[in-house]
Image 1 (cartoon, rainbow, N blue to C red):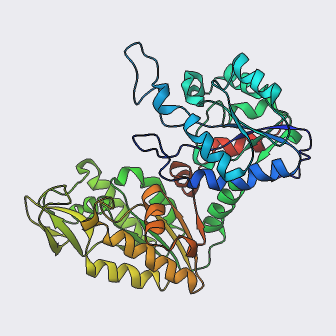
Image 2 (cartoon, helix red, strand yellow; image 1 turned 120 degrees about the vertical axis):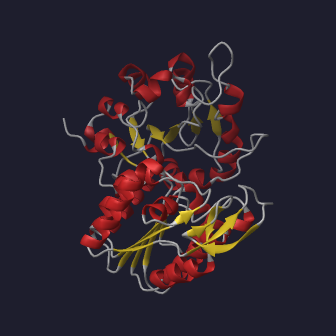
Length: 404
């Protein structure tokens, strides 16, 4: 974070407060809010005032009223105000819009040492379209612009990237969280101590193609779990029953397997699985060889033998990257593989390895298993972390660094 002089300055900070809410709009996981606190407090302690902007959900895509307007009761950031005030110990004001006279008046009346939270940026269609006029309106609100929203850094949205052009180089910068996220992501890409292991899960190979291919040249071992493993197993001729599979990606899976062999990268696939008769926690389930799942059954987690193989490989690694669950983590009978991986990574980290964990389910598993504190770095970014590890340029990062 640049050594800004925040005294008597109103600092516009893009944060990622896209937190999960219960049906009664209670925050169920405040990790992203807590991770933004170091930047917020540094500004306040430096004698400045903080104006926060964020998105929450996808209000123009997820749920619209018949007239086409967003459900502002569900997606308002007002739900965050009380919790943010309790975390910071500073007064938090709320503006019913993120631009226009309402926001400008609220920003004008904001006192040093106070926080102003603006309404959901995605209530405006121009946010996701990267509208420069919307970005210019946002820029009017602050003297300095700080981007601390790594979770949105891969989007060229008005508030995450386009807005930066309306601030001179000495009036824009990264927040503490953004700096840590990028620093740790680049560490595993360019300065990782070998052996390096990546543990990848999730539903689709198609979501992780670029990541697998980029990591192939940088890792010694890649372990693949989750539903995406069944596409590889079928590509090898295995029987996978009713397990989730991407039939149009079988040739790609074979190419990845061949690439792993050519680069001498050890690619670990499940040897056994917890299979069930239905996608349900109450369904009959039992252990099966991962490539011998009969019709009418589906694989929903890695099995005990696979857990041992993955754990042994983790125990031999000096750098660990984990993204994606090993099974249907949200259902207790199929959470064992994901939780076991979390514990194995934590144990190896405590033994001296470096670990980077990212992705909602992976982070949740680390938290649920009580080992989050033992991980080297837990990323708040899902798609942003993937794109960083894929070697792509992140618009939210490039906009701050761009020289004019």
